[in-house]
Image (tube, rainbow, N blue to C red):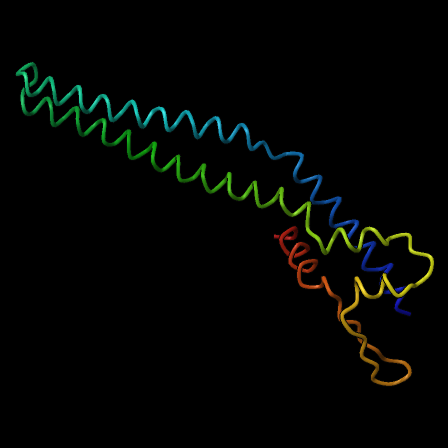
Length: 158
């Protein structure tokens, strides 16, 4: 009975791992990082333009109204770039977390035993925390990796 349960869990873990790998194929973290770098460059550019603008105002090349108007335009662009940067940072963090799911120890532990033919003590020791027998026909298996495995499975469905 325990062998059958281990095989079932291993099959589900294998399927979950395949889904994670398929989802990870579409992630392009380097592209997101390049975009982030571009927005950081734009922010730096805005800061230098504000300094140049102030210098023009200080030397009398711009009136106060012109200076304030141009400064406001730069500040709006800067605000937009900051929003984009925050959004990209979140996407990068999500993508990195998604990539990390592929290395989930609970999934990998079960997948190793998907073709298990016979139960052995080391296998039970690695996968099973405890087995509770309620009567001859009912038992409960508490897995060592259940939390990580269920969490990974839950994250895929989200």
